[in-house]
Length: 362
View 1 (cartoon, helix red, strand yellow):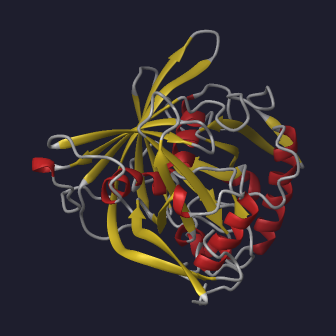
View 2 (cartoon, rainbow, N blue to C red):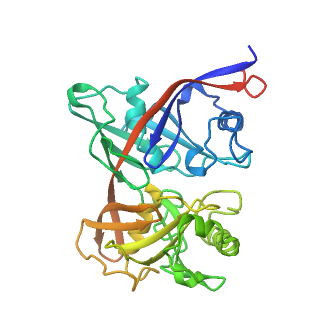
């Protein structure tokens, strides 16, 4: 046999999709693992024509699941962001949208058993250490995907997956404000550098000469903006103690503007070299936390809620996402937990094949 077969479940999780593997079915060595994921996805070509990627950063994501090594958790979720046009894999971040499919995928793989009409699964995000409780719909003990929940960026309705994120502050850098400041100025752009579920550099759209209401396509076509944003992001990564981030997808970048569709804020999120077509779950938690924190770049863009938990409605490029933030405020703003509702659906299962020259399965 000239190819190695690897079992997988192909899932849509939130507004992303990709293969979900058992960690034990993949090589332990991260360099070899990266080679396998590049081959499986078909990274290195715009259409991912020689793999199962979809030619977009939201369709080249990978989840790897195992029984948890953490006493608190049931399932360990190890995430990989595979590039589209480069043969690169980033193991630093996590992904909240793909996490939406972890509970159902764990049940599909036999890693977790259903329990009643709603099954609670405790998940540890291996990349960041974040702890998440997922509640999956299992009426009569049967996993279901059909339901009445709707999320922007996904057609139709599906069964809700309820997510509660805990321990999200400083998940990548160890600090709520990695630079120690509520605001920093980089190359003339005022930023809030914040680490809640995802390390981010956040700016006001108007400071880049934008409205904040541009479509994803309009932003992607504005290469002058992307060049300037990337220079600011790289410097912000250094200030956040993350080193040279020129080849890393973190920190992510976000823009804010006043809401115009009845939400709390209008936002745009970058992956970072392309505009996110909707909004990342992790990024939504960070931007909602920034919105609620006095003294950040969000000041003056919203009427800030002062009671907890607070519902923050973020207007993104394809609709809205609601984040429920449990917070406290003593000497400084503290995020205790953040909750969201997502959906997921199994698309396919079977085996994905990679050349034996990449990995022979041993």
